Image (tube, rainbow, N blue to C red; front, side, top):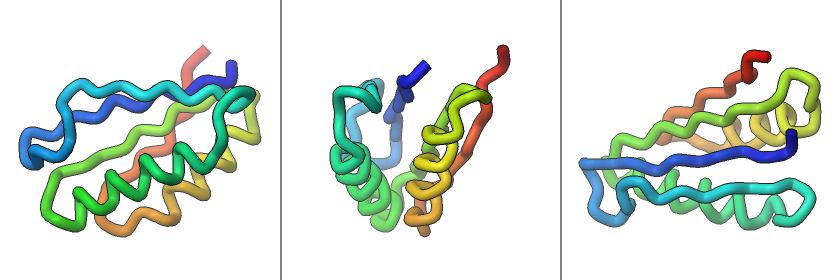
Length: 87
């Protein structure tokens, strides 16, 4: 599985649209698009929004785990959770 699903929800910050969903397919999308999304989430968190990012990856997919680790290291204000998917 090469997909990561990001659900954005924040009642504390109007700039974030509740329920906005972005899907990232590593084979079709660039890491730059995810980086831009993370930058927007980090900026909102810096302004006081309660932002949590859950990065789910297949236990067999080291690349997606490493990408998640790298993106998580860049976040200072948003909370980042790296989660291995069951199965």
